[in-house]
Image (cartoon, rainbow, N blue to C red; front, side):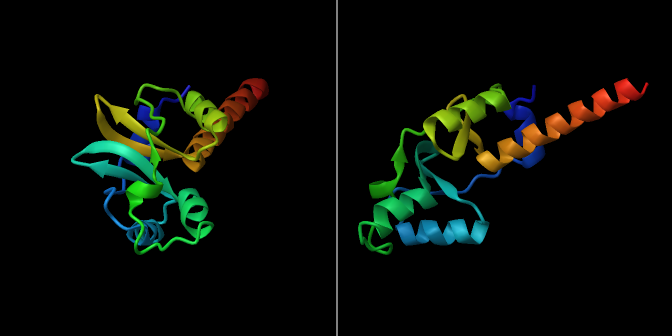
Length: 142
């Protein structure tokens, strides 16, 4: 069973973040530029929360707020669920499914070391299953 650490090594540990004082517009522009659906909200190296496209849609657009005037800190999801590098990919999928969220920060000794999306996890599970199928087919074929 693959661990988060193994997945991060393959995927890379680059994370994108904004501060709670940044405008929502800046966050959305950064998401668009980086082709990601969520950003970490950080202050002085500490994880404060997460802002996602879903937060934007539900807490800005639907409430007719200004993206330019609304700070990220007003709409971010605080205290996001996190995992350690030792966690399994399957456990991460369980957490995301149960919590109904799509992005999962990876924290090691209080320091953010990566971020996983549901797409990263699905890809890892598909690759793992493909390898198992290939091994079984080779075993059966002799």
